[in-house]
Structure formats: structure tokens, C-alpha cells
Image (cartoon, rainbow, N blue to C red; front, side):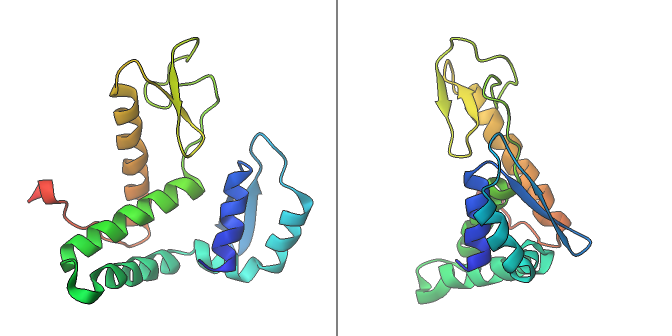
Length: 163
């Protein structure tokens, strides 16, 4: 992981999002303000962060990660590509995915109230009464990530159950 990726991860940890727009970095704070030191580091690494947010970076990462998973013959090319794709979907979601208010279920969108929930790795929450909310949210965020990656010129590998 390069320093730009680490900076982006730190922004995500404080609930912020960063995007590239016309050669500029646009940072949107979440519930907490972005620490001044982090803003300073982001300014210093602007070129590297912009490169990391570019479609070309995502395409290169897919190729590199596929090759990495395929090396040694432990995985077929198709299996390696699916694993690399899954990693990029997760990375895109953690950097740019939807963040809902604490009171809202990420799966059904309803008020959480006193119902038991699971706090997910991205900070969102889902009802635990059934697995429906968790499954719906997983399908939605993966779909969003897939659409974003495809829009950047990547081609989703064929999933095993689609054969």
C-alpha cells in the first residue's frame, strides 16, 4: 500500500471522502472534522492521491492483483481475477461507498430503533432480526462498486455461478 492509499484510508477512518475533480482533490468531512495534520499531508501528496483516484490506477491494480493471485499456479486466471475484483470492490466501497446515519438500517433503510443490529466494517449498521437486511445491503454496495469500476473501464470477471 502506497502513502496515498494510506492517506485515503486515514480519511475514511475519520468518516471523510476524497474525490478527484478537474485536477483538484475534493474532501468531504463526515460526522467528525478532518484533522488539520491530515489535510496538510493530503496537500503535500496531492499528485500521488490524484493518481490513486484515477481510473488508470484502478485498472492497473486489477491487473497487478490478478497476476499476484495467479503466481505460483495456486489459482487459475479466472479465480485470480475474481479475487482481485472482489478486493477492488471492497476498496472502492471503503473509500467511496454510501454511509448512512446511525439511526438508519443499511439494508432496508428503516429506522433502527431498539432492534438488535450489527455494526459493519464500513461503519453502517444493519438489522439482525433476519439476514435479509445484511444481504440486501451487501448486494447493493457490491452493485454500486461494480458499476463504478466498470465505468472506469474495468471488466468484471465472470462469476462461477454465472457460468
